Image 1 (spheres, helix red, strand yellow):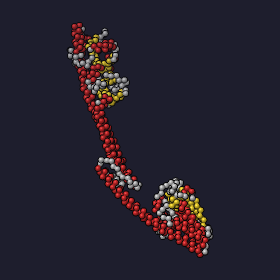
Image 2 (cartoon, rainbow, N blue to C red; image 1 turned 135 degrees about the vertical axis):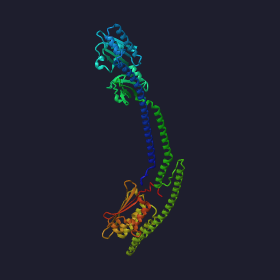
Image 3 (cartoon, rainbow, N blue to C red; image 1 turned 90 degrees about the horizontal axis):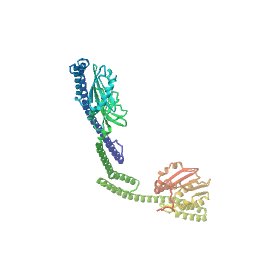
Image 4 (tube, rainbow, N blue to C red; image 1 turned 120 degrees about the vertical axis):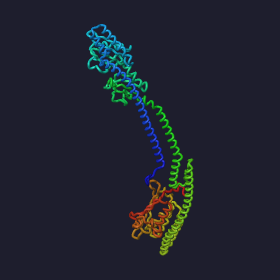
Length: 575
């Protein structure tokens, strides 16, 4: 449940949702791949271990048979045992008995080959004061090895030392290696050899694939022999069931520690071979991922085109309407009926609002026009009262020539005074009207009032509301002038730095504005108070809304600053 006050952008929320869905899909895909790979690998490892276990039994059975034969021959002192026969051959003085014992020993040696195919050869060496006697049996491949052994064992050999008896030893001949089992019976030595080929052939039955490496290593991890060449490899028993690095490849090591020999036999299966079995599964999962991605992407495009875009377009239209563009409307391109109904209802509502706004605008124009006319009726009597006072004063003085001059000025003044206050006038006309007004005031106050104008020629045709300069000049004449000093009024017009606004300033050398007006309190004054000031402020608000500004301040006299939009009659169409 969402927290109160928390809001979300629909576009952002939908994008986040689809991103989360896709990431979850990827995570599920990766997790499933890992689980399946691990499970499949575990099954392969388990099968390899079971196969190696079967090979282990075959190897150990062969070794146990050899040990059983040797120990029975040594411990069982029957007339037909190797021990008794050797003793007869060495100690009996009867030549016939000795020859019979030797023949019996030869048959026993020959018979060992029939027990198991894993025995490559067996030999019996009977020491004597002369060269000794050799009895042997074996396959053709072991002939060279047997001859080398006879040559080596006839001398002082490490293979016949007391420290070497009772365990299997490694004997190397050319490219082949053999496991030798040596047992001493008084002055007789029984030697049985197992070739690396026989051991590797048994282990080969447990291979996972044809590229697996069968091996044997000692307790230190040094390799004794292997079905493939492995350089500088240490195959330690403690790594059984784990992956080991050999060269640039990684192998699963599975094997067992032989109780009979003390050596470690096993198989190395390449990781790439195991993982290669998962290729089909991985391709299937990749296809599923691609299809899922396409479905998610397609559904995302569908939602964007038929849901998100209409909503975004509707929001954009609402912002345009909020900015005052009531000509905008929602144009929905979606097959979803609900959005079409919503868009049609919204557009119908906007048409109604637009009609009401036009009606309200026309009503406001009528009200503003009535207000302008009312304000104009207020200001005109105010000016005419001052003019009549001037004529009255001249009539009292009997200055009829001056009355004629004043009357001409009043006529020019009156023509401008009856200008519609709702219209805009050129700045030039306002200044001409101001000159007529000052002619009247100079006659009245005997040229003790002076007007200075600073108006650039390029602004003379700009448009302003009528009477906005005259009102404040009249105010300066009324309040700044005294009989003790002359009145100086300065009127200045200039453009703002951005050329968008026109700044009009009226500055006199009087006592300045009262404090009650400096805080802009005139904005809230009733129309009866400060008629001219309130009139100008109201007209500026009606004509320019908030684009105009009127400020009153004191700077060695009253300073009025009026800022209005710049409208050049020569470069703008004005209605």
